[in-house]
Image (cartoon, rainbow, N blue to C red; front, side):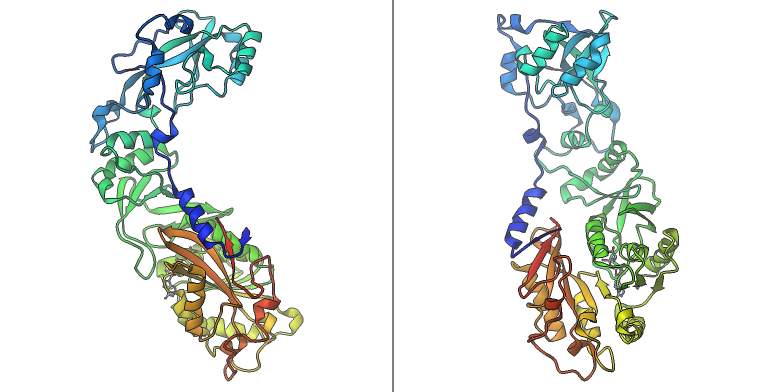
Length: 507
Ligand SMILES: C[S@@+](CC[C@H](N)C(=O)[O-])C[C@H]1O[C@@H](n2cnc3c(N)ncnc32)[C@H](O)[C@@H]1O
């Protein structure tokens, strides 16, 4: 984890850069080869680059044209709505190097830089003219003439007694040889974004298509299934996650309807029905960040536990876990996943509203935990991952406990998630949380940037110890945490601040 001071503008900029996707034309260096769309003639047509300079129709001239279309599917697939794989046949001319079959692997080792790399294309093929030879397929974007070899490559060829003469070979490309991005770029309207990725949830590709992509959604889904081993279903989100249980309605675009799936995250296995519960593979780093803060014997209360991605690893770490979720389906799969990962004895599972969980089982357990003799006490962590609303639930901590306050270093540590669209999201979250509790948290909390959810929308986690003045009945509220801010005295793994706001970033 990188810890930086006041880095938000910087982090945002970084995020923007990381989110930029180079287009195919930016990525591929255009090249010098004639594309041929007639019938395949797999006979190498040998010519010498040195001699080519004498002709007026030289490929070097075509090289200058920089043909970026070489590995694009045929142009007549544009606008295709129903996937017709046979329409993707195309013949291209590829540079090849002839070598004796017994030295192929040695030559290949030295030509890694320029060897052709296409899905499903063999880089070494038989020479139809001479069975003692093999043809090494070269990357036409890198090999224009034999001058395109680097010195070291030429010297290896010389040592192995291989002539650097380049021949050309007519190669038939089919649907299998195109990458998903190339296929979609050829099919979707010219100049419009093609999808650059998806979230993988077990066997499901979870897409988030834009309006202009919707007419092609079934084709897009099928291409994702074809091109990603292990994916057998493609779904598109059809509403924003704004329902209580944070799952979303989805349309199955292609493949199997079955949404019962199994995922691995940080070495634990989770099973659930993706159409009924919340699961976001982008939170795996956050799940392990929080788990790493826990020590064996600590107590974890997970107020919005989902199917268990904080609860299971915490229990595996020998923490005592109380995990809750209001969604009966999440509750069911939470129980299931505790058994699946063999931690069911260490996790108590509840199906309550977060406020009732805090004011019921959490209160009861805290009263017991904090009354234990000091040497038997462990840290108590409360995780609240419901970013759209969790801050509102902080009010449940007000006057939650009776009796004499425990010492301030044992006060529960809250990790509460929130979204912010503010220009200073860390301060915004501190202010929102502080406003609910009626105190200032700016000097005694840390804020961690979890991820950039949308342009100018961040997900953050604010961490602080609940002051005794808030947690216990009949205590005087210290509005500024004056002389004794608990987190100031408890510095753990660079997470807590010493006076100022500290922001720790995943990015
Ligand atoms: C954003 S998800 C987080 C799930 C899990 N902690 C994770 O990191 O993947 C929030 C969870 O809170 C649950 N939830 C929503 N409202 C709730 C409430 N009032 N009380 C308890 N759980 C609630 C949802 O069902 C959902 O599983």
